[in-house]
Length: 298
View 1: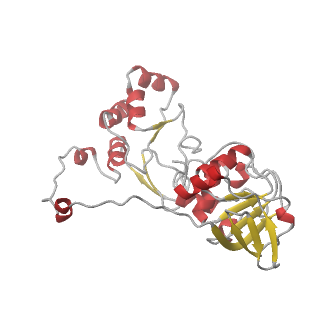
View 2: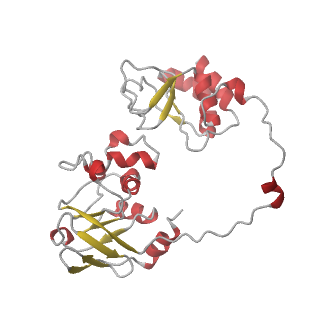
View 3: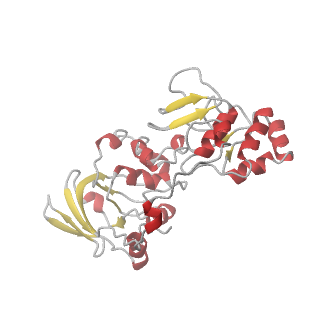
């Protein structure tokens, strides 16, 4: 309880640094309730902490997750063998150091973050000012790439991105786990190249909703997914996040794996350069096109 009070005193009135995640798991139900009664839970929530249910969650990493390759974890609890906390780097520190580090965004101590910040003299950039131009973000409407034909129906989100990786929030880390729970495609992420195109069967992305099942393809640079149909929630998530998707009847039976295809989002035309044949998909709707051109709904 003393550790949690110490962490709360550091976090009070502050926010977790952008791009960082702080997870706290009270050891027992009584400790959890005491944190609630003392107002610590509210402090944690206001700071942006992810608060787990009471338990020794670290052993199985069931509530606090594991690090992905290239990620750094600052932890208060050690493990009994290398790699049990994931593929990233792990530093064992005190609770106060964890809290201070997650506020500052770098590994530091509570003493360091309490020091006043010193600024250098005003730069010429500040004096002159910077004229900001309005963003004119524009995605390409035509795509060309190698086809990955996966002639399977009802591929759910757990096959796309397994729930054991749901703790990963960095899009760049998601790609390596794409399809590693889909039989026959466990090595997909190692073989896929930027601009590749996925051609797949019916009801793609069915099952429980998870944003990672969309973002993992963006992580790999997959240019578009063409399916015979999509799960409703998956389709909405993809559109809202500017991941190009098209629906084309029986497309997984018309195109061969490895063919080079060209896709026009505006017309829905699909040219198989290898077969020298044209196929038709349902083109982008106006709302889908508007969202895509903006780079996403948000």
